[in-house]
Image (cartoon, rainbow, N blue to C red; front, side, top):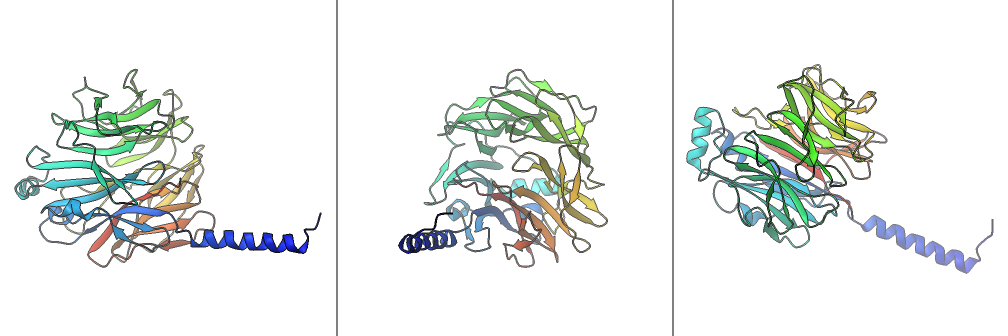
Length: 391
């Protein structure tokens, strides 16, 4: 091996030191999530209206609330809902519900998401400047517009779900909120769990709890025949070869996968009696919790999910060919929820309720070490983590 002269070696050493210093100084990626109070008397609305969208670095530093101006009005709250592909824009849901409607819901133990009683809009928030744009209020089509996401391979297109005449429908729209297009406009069934393939050419959703695959414009829809009454929240694998979803009966469903052409249906794992609903309040809640769905690994070779082990809900990973690995083993009564892998596949962010408090953790998938990145006190909780993509 050729030796560098002393001067060249010194220069190289200085360059390496400067590079390492720059890397060390670079802040770790952000995790977006939602904070809320969990024990306030008065039922669901009293606690849910305390939700605030926040971000924190993956090492637990730099926690801050996003767009506090969106929650100045009484009975409004914000939720962290996702990121742009480059991680520079946060997707924030902003909700308002009238106290009168909330009282009706509590008394009747059911949602009543009606104009004048509810308003849900989705904002794009520049993470650097805090500028917030309400894209669902442009050429408004509904009083309830949720689940906004950036359409893959098309930076000028968004997807979202809107409530139309009491039924949810998947929509596409331009980046500025215009040209909203109903992708199941002939349907009178409740459609939800809307997602796209990574190339942006296919979509998936569940309609009346049956999973459908279709082209990006909603055409050529094909129902996945599972023989089960419940199919929920389909998502495409990174390579577009498979679609992952929950399947079975309501309250007793498990991770299934099907090939992109609708063939090859198979059960990946069993949740061992876990009903898949995260109870995120410590007071009585008529709804029953937040859906805890499986998610693809960054490389698409495996799936992260949660399942019951004795009195716990633990984290698991299963390969597409069915090899299962339990990732966490925690004290009795622990609840894990909402896992999401980092874009590089090295880390997993998730929620965990230990000592009665819902906190966000980051886990190193190589050595199993974990770090708590939120510091919620008793009576409060952290929910719905989303890992920031890196440009």
